[in-house]
Image (cartoon, rainbow, N blue to C red; front, top):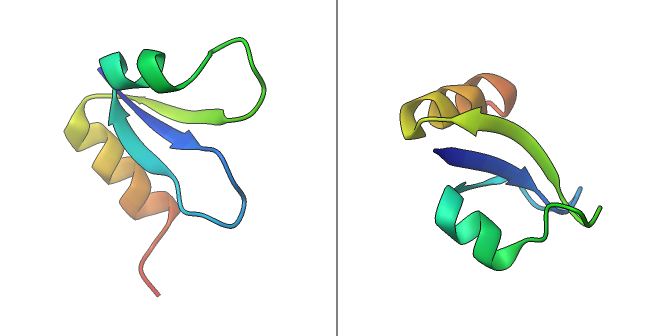
Length: 54
């Protein structure tokens, strides 16, 4: 399972693995937002549709 994490409005979101998510982020804190959760390919498809290249 992979997560698309947005932790700043100025930076683009990042895709991280579930194990790294729980190591780096506390799900109870409101310092980040999980925008999507799925497989690696689903996360890349979400990023491509939501944040097109300029």
